[in-house]
Image 1 (cartoon, rainbow, N blue to C red):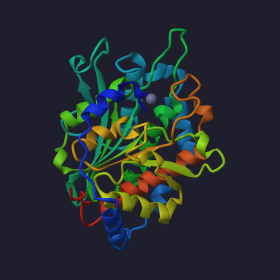
Image 2 (image 1 turned 135 degrees about the vertical axis):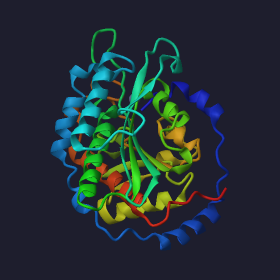
Image 3 (image 1 turned 90 degrees about the horizontal axis):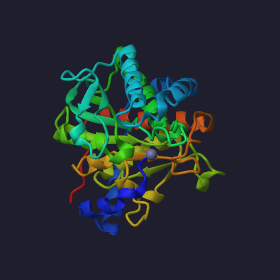
Image 4 (image 1 turned 60 degrees about the vertical axis):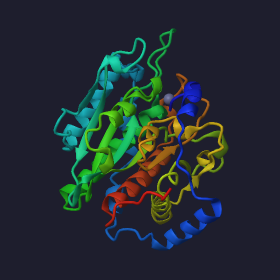
Length: 347
Ligand SMILES: [Zn+2]
């Protein structure tokens, strides 16, 4: 999750869609709820391949000191990229045809002294509507090393989201090997340069590997391994941001999936347009949303270790990280397998 430094710039960029009036919107949602029927094939056995043990084991590796805080363009980020690529090769998810897992971003794209960097991308082709793409994204860069030589391990930000995407990818590839692969294609997109200013996701949306018009939605995961102060006594929650801005159907699918499988308290506090934190504009999904692609941002909120060297793997709640990863998997599964592509709101 990026800090709020550029908030002023984002304010200038906001060209929001005109949304339905509240009354009208409620009516529409009631209409839609009666129409949301989940897919018949039960993905639970695949979701259950997402385990606490694997998430823990991989997050300890990914947020290890050896990754040197994964600062964009630096050696640690390159090591992290290699780790992700190796994972996809191992589980048998290929790269998009035109690249070899790395979408290279030239130095010129970045401002200041930031060096060239790369997004890491893997592609699981859909069985029925392969041209329709669901993008699952998480940034894998972090803050590097401070002037005292202390490493920002970024276990929650965003080792948690990155490892969840790897586990979700494993669940989907297992389903495909067993003959029930997703009908739509899934692009696993690990973006760089988020902490420096959402560079990797902007680069992707300006240089998409598959047409944006065929991009059904973006589910973005940034910080899902911790519990914030507001939920200390009721940790079974996740903040959902942006799900209803462009597609009420996406919003309702996520709700229906949660009701059926995961039973989280879905907290919409930060989804309010009046929320001063403006998280909707502060992670990578925003680059998709501004291209009129429906998004969901999954987020645990900030905590005392946010952007501190104390954001370490020992502080992660692995049970929650596992369950939140499953929610994202179930929602992706549903969107990938529904008969019709999800609809954009009229505006
Ligand atoms: Zn961050």
